[in-house]
Amino acid sequence: MDLEDMPEEIIIYIASFLTDQDKSNLARTCRNLKRISYTKSLWEDSVVYLQLTENTDGYEIMYTSLEKRGLSLFNIDNYRSLAAHLLVIAQYWPSLICIHDFSQNEAQTGFMNITNKVMKNVRTLSLFRIDTKFTTLILSLFPFLTELDLNTTHFSDDCLSLLVSSLIPLQILRISRTDITNQGVAFMCGSKIQDQTIMYDATASKLQTLEVLDISRCRHVSPQIWQCLSKLEKLNTVYLSSGPDVADDDEYKDLALIPTLKCIFMRDISDPERVITQIAESGCILEGLCLDGEIDDTSTLNFREGFPDLLYLKLNSQILTDCGLANMAFFLSRLIVIDLSGCSTISQHGIKYLAKRMDQLKFIRILNCPAISTDIVSSMTERICIHLDSLKKRKPDLSMLQNDHQRSIWLRQILCSY
Image (cartoon, rainbow, N blue to C red; front, top):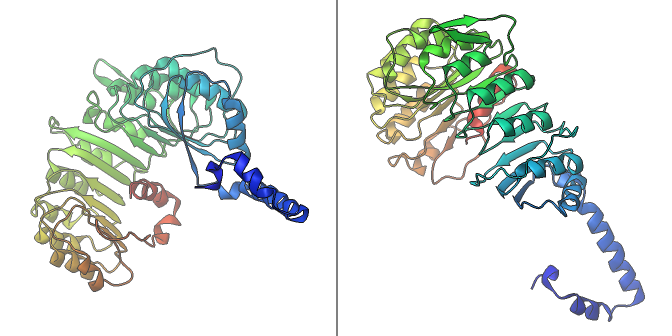
């Protein structure tokens, strides 16, 4: 039985056998342990998991305790009235910086008038449910957000218009699988669509500090609107989907020519070869590229030219073989990170050849590849870190990327998923 589960009467009975000096020493020890347990450095990486009830009575004491301990990471497992709790948190847990909502509960009951409370320290917010009314509350409570994750919510153009006009410091916005349309994307870039023509307004509000944007898998967003993204002067990384219906225009080429863009994540692409060809022809300066689609060995020949600065490549193809790896090893010699997870037809010979040819390679990720075993590790040099399904993962040395601000932006996006 743990001491905390032991009945108080038994503890008192045991303590009765102690001398006065022993009891005094015990009291001092407990007092010091309690004081030490509230040292903020002990809790800085700890995450609080809570199921929030509709009634907020009594939560003031708990939030005050969390504030005293210095906890700042909050995961919500379930709730009945998140809005009411946020207002209590704003008062009693002001140092909170990160909130993630993992609830499946659609209830947003208990909305109240917005007070002058502001959670000025919250920088990261992830929500599972949202509407225009809740968006208003969010913007009032969290005016200094730098990262907002609303993936798979009913986030709409109306919600986005509120966000663009109010959330000035936003750097990361994830709105994949939401209800936004081309009009919403144009609006966040300071443009509008009129008579199927995109018109830019230099005086309009836009997300001018945005560095990372995920608008992939949004059913009502088409590649034709990608040209608007060039108006976001600090855009570094984008997540996009093309879907089955893509016009014959040069969307990928225009996208790659955005001067600030360093990394592109393409999801659900129907013609990977066309993507690689257009990007190569653009003469871009991309440093990272992720292609989620079936790429065959012939398609890898398109890496022959047009990717002089590519440092990170992720492919997910079940038809790519060792021959394709050999092509990439020859054409993409500057790669530092390569992720081939899901490429189930490659073998250990292909990975060994890749590592031998790419003398700058630091990190290889090859999950869900049955033919790759842990035996491959012994044949690799110490400079290369390998992540396999059955291998204990060690941290790769990517300091050469992390020390550069622009590279660290897209690097954080790939490492947070590892």
